Structures are given as structure tokens and as C-alpha cells.
Image (cartoon, rainbow, N blue to C red; front, top):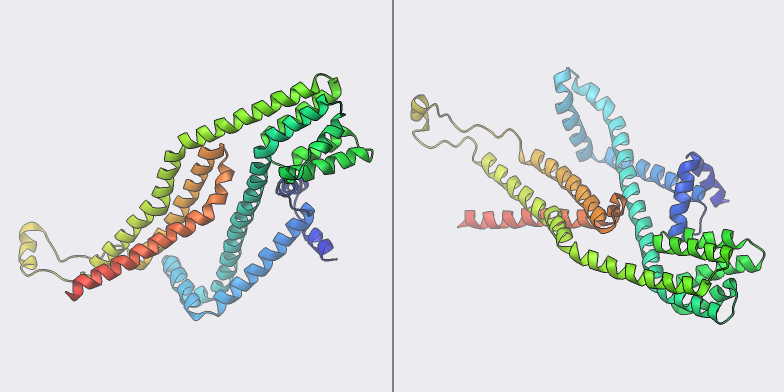
Length: 358
């Protein structure tokens, strides 16, 4: 019953999006229909948005912040404060929906990518040994489906589970090519996809199947070794990007924030004789900074978020060649960057207060 409700809400998406989502959750090993999964996300976003909007609306400090910010932005348009107060609830609703949508997108994407990568890593680690065993079974006189069945040993983990499901389908009368395609769909692995294609070709042509499996196993081992070498070569670039995004930028923004605070605290103080020099050197009393500490901190938080997002995409491209792969690093990188930012702020406050006390 509940699954039917989820599927009903999931049908608001186009068929192409549902198919793409279906491929992702299948590769992630999630046993659910894509419509139900999408519907669950829709209802979760709706409920979370209502909850967040209610919390923000009933907090006086939050309302005051939105009224102050909107009033400052719209004051130049001649909009009165009373009119600003009327549109604040709508702004809170839109803000809550946008925040929940962004958070849901990054959390769900990171979850799916982590699951897909975990399954792919396990399969690609055991695939060479599995293929070698299948080849040995074929040489011993077994048919292809029997060779796959007896090669699916417990030590091969989820690969054995998926292979046995495929072979069970073949034993029950399903076409071999149709069943073996499900094996490739269950893992987002190019190596496994290429292996499935070779198995289908070997089954159709009836060539030296055992030799094909042995060659494929050797290729899989070489590919794994090359990936490790490439990863080791690019490690320094990844460390540099991580340091710049998670430590360097937050540190600089925290220092600048306290620098602006120092300028603000000293605003209005002019050394004696400054007014005398004003006529000769066109010097005047110090003027207030164009932005406040609070404004700069809001700006810093936004820039750090954007910087971390771009850096996560760069790391994804360096590691796998796919920008989307970087999404899984984004939540952890963002938390680390914000922790460092606030730690530096607190440390500078303690350091400066200690100097002033002396």
C-alpha cells in the first residue's frame, strides 16, 4: 500500500528520468522500483521543507534577519517595511524548499555514488580470479552456464550472488543473453560490461571460450594495476586541491574576517594631528569599512561552499574522469572546511583577547 503511494508520486517525473534513476539504484544494489524511490524522495522533500519553513517562521531572530535583509535589499525600490513583512513568509518557504532540495540532491547523489563505487570495487577486485575459474571449468568440459554456476563461490561475494541469479534465470528458460545483461546492469563497471560482451560473443560463436576467459582475466588484472599507478601519480594534485579548498581558503577568510573586525573596532579613532595634516596632505579621519564583519562572514560561508563544490568536481575528474563522481566527496569536504574556518575564528579571538588583556 505504502509502495503504491510512493509510486504514484514518483510518476510525476518523465520516463527518461525514471529509467536513469532505475539504472542508478540497480547499480547501487537497492531492491526498489525507481518510481517508488522517486516518490519517497518527493514526499521527504515536501515534509522536510514544511518542517524547516515552520521552524524558521516561528523563530523571532530568523524573521528579524529576513526582514532586515530584505528591507536592505528593497529599500532602494521604495518598498515600505510593512510590505516587506508581508512577503517574508513566501521568501522563507522558497528558501526552505531550495535548501532542502539542494541538501537532498547532494546527500542522495553521494549515497548512490558511494554504494555504486563500493559494489564496483568489490566486483573488479575478484573478477580476474572469477574469470580464471570459469575458464578452468570450461576446459574441464562444463557448459558456459554450468561453468558460471560452479565458479560462483562464496569468496566472490556479491558477484557470486548476481551470477547465481543470472544462471537461475537461464535454468528456468530465460535467454542466456538477456539474463547475462542483467549482470552488467547490476554493477556500474566498464570491465564487467566488456566481460559480459565477450561472454555473449563466445556463447554465440562457440570459439575457444576458455582462452577468452583467461585473456579477459589477464586484461582485468593489468587494468587494475594501471589504475593504481595512475592514482599514485595524481595523488599530489588531489592533496593540493583538498588543502586549498578545505584548509587554505577557510583560513584566509577567517583571518580577513578578523582583520575587518579590527578595522571596525578602531573606526572613529584618529591620531592627534591628523586633522592638522588634512589640509596639507588631504588626509581625513578614517572612514568606516564598506562591509561589516557579519556581511563578510556570510560572504565567506557562501564562497567556501562554492569553492568546495568546484574542488570536489575537480577531484572527481582527476580520479575517474567524471565530474559527477566528485559529489560523494562534497559533504565531508564541506564539513571539514567549515570546521577549520570556525576553529581559526575562535583561535584568533582567543589570541587577540590575550594580547589586549596584556
